[in-house]
Length: 156
Length: 295
Image (tube, one colour):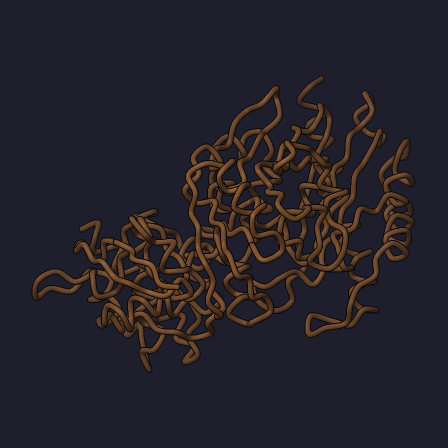
């Protein structure tokens, strides 16, 4: 049972025909070629598939693509401008916020959502917001430092 | 996931009609956090999904005769951050804040959490302790049920085929009352509880003696459990270690936990008594503060 959906992905209107059971993550990766978002646990726990739906971070692995019909999706590919990284991305590089990198797209998208919602988060707010993004290299301190640095730069 | 037909009607009546047409073959979807996960694990294979997401009016939090009416499509995050909820029933905002992660709370809905009827969830526990009612619509009309009577068995609620949760009505605490939600989380912050307890305590005009109390527990049985025997022990009593011990004993007799990776049944039973003591201590303290404020 296929259906046609229209959605705005990283500012561009897209139309795709998909089976109803396609997750938003698979739609982004396989129908739209945006492979930045990763599948980790597949049950909404690990955060590797984090994207923004109408500006709010969600787990795209347990969202149906059909339910995003008519809505706006932002993925990690949509963060950088022309030739210039998003401040969160630059901070993750500068502060060593990633190791193997598999969780990084989800970490970066979650961090962007955090700074959109709370521009000057406390460490407690960073920890609470990011607790749903797992890093098996356990680079959590550097991730928190990266987010702190991104917030400081945005203030400057 | 297996193939299914997807409908996203714009009115509740249309949704109810589609549900009636397909009976047991159809499932309602809202945030999808529970349902899509279960479908991906092939625990459920519905032939039809009926989305409530395009129906307007189900995503509101309203004051209703001094109570709060929370629409079925309100997300956990909306409850947690609502100034109205934070001001009127702070324990409810705090309870929703303890669910999973911010990301999941952006998706999961109030109605979905009830309909899912998972005994490990946080919100039902506090809703029972607060005396909340769930409002239901079916083809034959509407009905309301105390949340305490809504859960029937493991992942089974009182919802009949073709019925939909439309809202939950939560009364404010009376004067000289306090409430607390405590969640025992020995593993990770986004986990289900090993044991969860919500308690409300209402004091006599003296501001010390318990007039009435409600206690509900999660993760210690096939449904959330209301500890009525323990509640009866508290009525008319003054706070004290002996009273908490007796209430804990009554709770141990009321729960029926399963052994799993969060702990053995025996361990959870003992921890239920400990956590009830902590919840009652916090709720009683809050009630004393509330009593002083109103005198």
